[in-house]
Image (cartoon, rainbow over all chains, first blue to last red; front, side, top):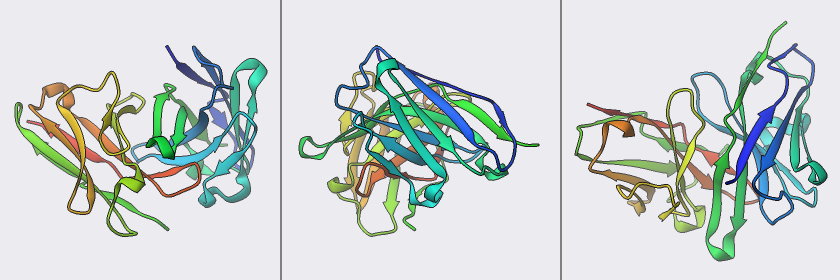
Length: 123
Length: 110
């Protein structure tokens, strides 16, 4: 059973850096999937933040520009998100998810998700 | 800026059939957009239902089906149950290793 669990501070001050970690269990993070972050502001829809592969290759949403850094720690089966210079607009529930991408096999999906963690940006 | 559009809200009677759609600002949605559908209930994480247009997961109830309809991706619920009341999101692939979510459809079972 694949499980993902987000962890990190629930409150971040404006202009500081938001840092979250996703711990994966039941599946090796090295084994051929991508790993992604998605967020959802309160009462609003979903927004894809970025994705990482086990080799460290990353793909970020251009709308978040250079504020996003995603990294991976294969020894601990974790991957992490850092979002710089946060504002109130970054207040959201942050989800991590497993991303399947194999277009020749007709596969693009986010099959397993963490339960999400609410991060509030406020002084 | 690519925009993915869904119906804001729909209402269906228990036992009825309803179709939710997902349109792209770039034009007709084809299988090459690998449409995905997710169900989200209040206070819960999204749950994957359909991937790559019509493929189901082991946990997807049989009453959910995906298709392409009139240039859009579609999710059809047949024999709707009260527990199907939820927000539904579509996701389309535009290249790279990410996609764009639709704004969501709030489905009411009444």
